[in-house]
Image (tube, rainbow, N blue to C red; front, side):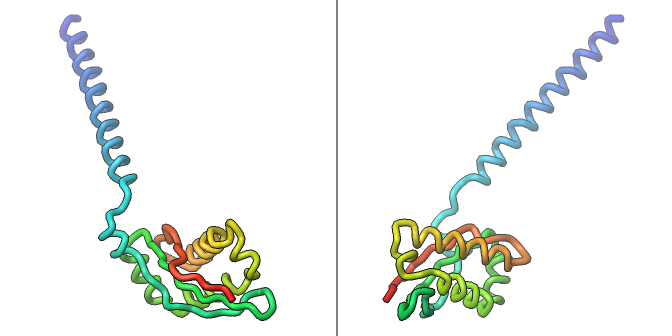
Length: 140
């Protein structure tokens, strides 16, 4: 009976140690994934668009814009670079849907960035767009 008790205790201790090690390992992995990207990684995983001029939804107004698109990995960056004309078309159609008043409002640029991020994510097969930033913005 004593040997059986010792075996049970050893099995329980091994299980507790194993579960504890797995928990610590998963915490360490999760914290390393949440770490913000370095400046070099951001440059490596982002694309700058050309300067784009397009009409706006309001009469006689146009916008001159440029964007920085941050992507989640190198394969997504490669796919996005191969779809340059589609990205450009998505940008033009999104910007053209805004009026001058909407774009220059308090939340105009943030709304544009959000809509463009969603539209580009729908377009991609691999990975996703982390964020879109307006890097040049002129409205006339």
